[in-house]
Length: 485
Image (cartoon, rainbow, N blue to C red):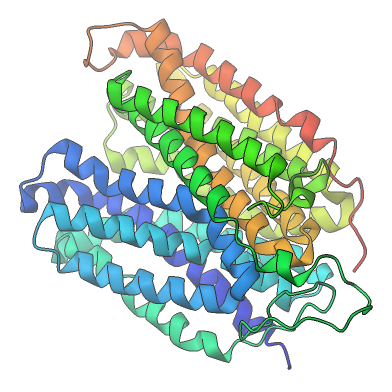
């Protein structure tokens, strides 16, 4: 079977862009949706929260399904389902339908995301993976930056339903093109499916046997259920805490996450066929890359939340002016991704990530020094540093995860990586909110005053810079030099 790497890369990038664009355009469309459907603020929030919970809960299981049934097949199901649910949301008669369909869309988004990385690993040689990951990261950054502009234009001209139709055509197109993707069969692993999803088991004694076919066939439903409950509870609590503070709902979410998480950890230790193979979680470059992504994403999105609030609530800038101040971050993430791939090849993952983490922390320290008198140039410089650093971390850590994952476990490794990128930002925003609330107390349910927020902003950013620094020990465990092809 002849691989088609260019088609695989195009499909992977388009799938990732569809998911990234969907989240950013929705944010702009939510006020119009609330007015049109006569929804409460809490109901509108659940159009985002329901999606996030579904995605976070199912990413790892979706990656395992890709390892078992073929990444191409899971990708096709995810893109087709994403397109259908997007079209259905555009036709939804009420807010209840929108929330339910957004949860269903999250399920298909979870199927889609790990498969994009699994297909890249299968189709491309090791020396071409970093640049492919860089192209994918640049496209995601561009979609995230363009989303608010596109969403605003569509909502103003055609209404909120148009933003959900935006992704239907590209999602259907890549779903239709997916059967033409040809992925080589990974002969090094037993029971790993080729692109048509068929599992072929080498003859006894064949080279490269790494685990029995019976083991590969097990999906670990008990572990999958426990992990889904743990992640759903955690994400729900982290999303709700910044909005509503401590409530019975957020406490219940954290409690469920703790109990289910503990049960999952025990199940992982004793199960004959755990959901996440033990070699994936063994100490090494893969787990180090995941730890770096967790620290960097928590710090980055926490700082972005603080900076955005300062721009709009303290400096009283409108959303467009605020977006222009943050624009250097998006520009550097897009433009810096190919540079990150070159640095990774020449300097190795360890040096590249350490330098990038220094840029992220430096940007946060600069942002902590902002005051009203010189906010614009200082903030733009800070966002530029953070964008360059975080974009480089994203490319490098993702390349390490994809390249270091055992060949039969690329999907579950990609699912773990995407899970980290869902949990990390929620942790960072919750931490920033808790810190500012502690340092700038006010009446319950009331927004922070400009003066109180300005006083708490510096310490919160210093704390977030320290969170970024927590990724340094993990970065030291990354490969020192780039591996050969």
